[in-house]
Image (tube, rainbow, N blue to C red; front, top):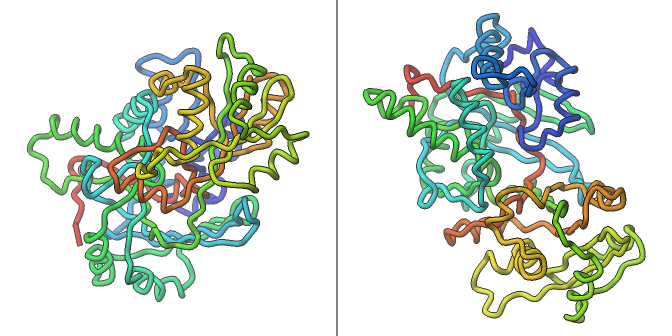
Length: 422
């Protein structure tokens, strides 16, 4: 962990790498020379080469910070309670979300740990190169568990009555509070309860798959390492699926660089269904997205037209993926009318993503995108249903808010380190 006597924690933490924009990266670089961005999303330079690049520099920073005490190892094994207090950006309400930050033994998706989203090969290759260079989990994966008796909530509540060990307050009065959970009877009981639950990936699919790939490589390189070697585990934030503080934001789509795209033709073809309503301005468009029936998609086109389209759920309704708004958008608009199949979308050539509706509308209005497709968020129940059925959503279908911070805890993966399981 960072030594709070040597750094201002609010100045050195950051969100996960995949939501850090170029402007964010510059800001975090200026904020503090020890900011975690130098590890998780380092600068790419024109002079980069195999001996000096963002991965080797991240490793250099990490080990230098350990050597100088900026980062310090915990004296005893354990886990952490991680509470996030924040304002719901959709409803404006104050919320809190509580999780257990711990290491979990890795296993392939499919039985005890379930995925709900497709991943991109490029992102996994990037994260694997970083993990191999640094030899540590730098950010937690985020997963949901099921505890119908809510025993874990009762176990952690007494600990949370005390003052937190760490308190990080960020812009917008977003608070991150940390309490230690030593390896004692309480943590053993928490582990026993979790043993009975499947884990459902909420965020960090790329990082989890990277941890699996890293584990497999390390097993080949260190065949004599014990089963409890650190590389067999991954740092995960575990949150109860019934936690009232779970918030999912929609992830909107931006279309760009698609040759032959004709906005008028697209709107005309969609209008033939009789379920398209033109909207006079962005205010009315955004309001319409909060109204009306299920399966409504918003459209903003490069010729200035705005509309909502109400899509039909497929007959039968037994497939939890097929009935999602994002799936209907991909199938009924992107694939059917624009010819963008999933294998094309996986190349990340024609679509980009943002949770900010104003941003995507500004991109279209400014001529930097051909169209914006606005979505409503799926529910937590949708995530559980999709993962539980062994299926996956299209990429960037969910955005759990807020993200657990990078920089709260690091998990070294040295093969000489072993994990004492409760």
